[in-house]
Length: 357
Image (cartoon, rainbow, N blue to C red; front, top):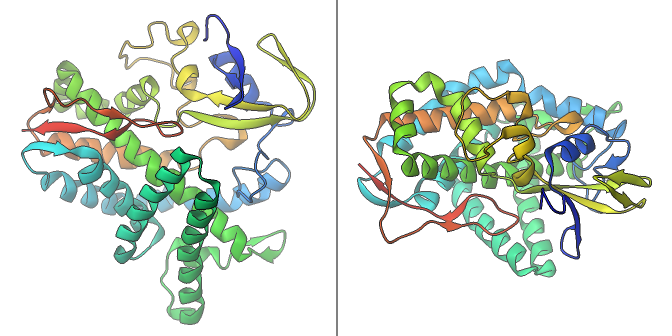
């Protein structure tokens, strides 16, 4: 598609944009390409300036170096415990490892109780099934269920007063936007965006990295010998196979994109999975290289909506990959049991059998 039809229309995704240059141009022009694509509140992902600016200020405060540094030892301990307890032999890595890691990490960062892990795991599965089936009533009910978890935690913290847990969820209750406290709807939206996106994307990332290492023994050996290469290697692996397939925008005025004339109100899908494999930027997109320009990698987006949690995600992925390599001797694929790819909008794998030695 990048070569023959880089901007294509379908009923499913409307205008799909495949080339790196076109995707970057859209990301850098929030005035022409709005993020207000949904009728539902999405703070701050689904907002444009100046509204976005004030809410993004609140969100960014929870991803400062100080916050992340405090969390780093907890992150390392969770990763070490999970990796050290992996059984030897055949393992289904997505359910037994990747999803558990995502749940524990996110709950630890937000200060959520451990007894929420399994309800959230069940919720993720129900949400995935409803999304794949296109069952909008079910999707609405499932969203309402998740919002209920958050509202219950807000109520608990209000009743506790000064004895409330000193965590991000409690802190959001005292945050202000435009001189007033955040509403419960706004807090729910912030935490929903962090949690729903983080749980699925983090688990996908872990699976993609593990699959690549198991499929490429020479890279696996290199990273075991030189763990200092992990940050660049992780970003490169996730460039090659995207954990997040696409993102949406809507045109605010007539505009030409990649030779296609779009009208005001036209909807676009930015295909990250294609842009990060564009030969015009990366040459052979399947070539594993550690000397690429990191600014060209769109793994965490670009522009005003660049992922605020990118430093946190990199920390988590570094620790889980490092500990996985530290506590194992070898990762390999299971003969006769191929991995099962996730279905759009998910990236990575739904099932990943691996041999752990």
